[in-house]
Length: 149
Picture: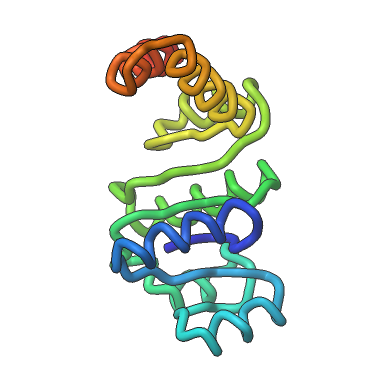
């Protein structure tokens, strides 16, 4: 279940599609939902904090919840409501601040992705490779940084 199909969610959706992994999109932009449906994507118009919308997305049987909405309060509410239905639901959530990342980690959200941090990892990885390190070695350095989170 993918909540949001904007700049971040659309990239995630593309990756899932390319890997032939089925997914459901919940999106609040009606025109975008209609376009996605025309493209054959299972898309639901509405607010993922609403029970009926989560029911239409089959949240109870979802294998993963991906929250890409930029609004931290909405993201918190979506996760809370989904976990009331399925406490064991693996979750990935987007955030923009270190404070929110710490809060979500304390709530035992599976993976919290902070855009600026991921950008820094990407830049560091590329810099290491440009300075003669192998892709594997750059991966190891980034893994070390991630372990410090």
